[in-house]
Length: 154
Image 1 (cartoon, rainbow, N blue to C red):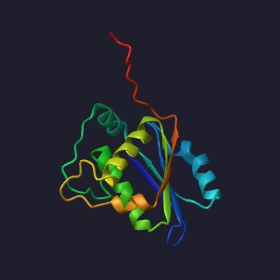
Image 2 (cartoon, rainbow, N blue to C red; image 1 turned 90 degrees about the vertical axis):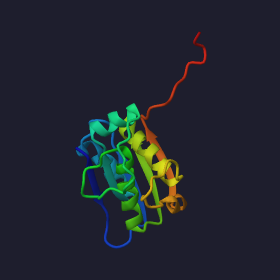
Image 3 (cartoon, rainbow, N blue to C red; image 1 turned 60 degrees about the horizontal axis):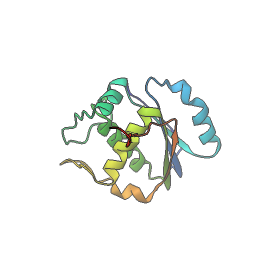
């Protein structure tokens, strides 16, 4: 199950934070973060990738076919979820946006977003979201994974 929720005020959003939940996260677990950002005047978009999407991302499996996915359909890959997220940001016409990512689920979504806005591995038929680099103000990593390579192995 992929969860997406947007709690925004009326009209054009000024600032948006995308909360990207961890593997197995429930929406209620993100409420305190949502409340914190809303109290600071930010609009909030919440995305929680399904366990299947997180496992596929961790395994390097990409089911994208090049087409931009429809927002109402469950995404088939982390890239599709990233495309849906970026479309929501673009539709909001916000001044700035940030990501607050949690653990693997959030970090894999962030990685897919970075590939798209930096136009890495772009597929035919995908929209160009590189313009959003100008409104991306930052990212908060919360308990996120790291790549570790032991250089001292024999």
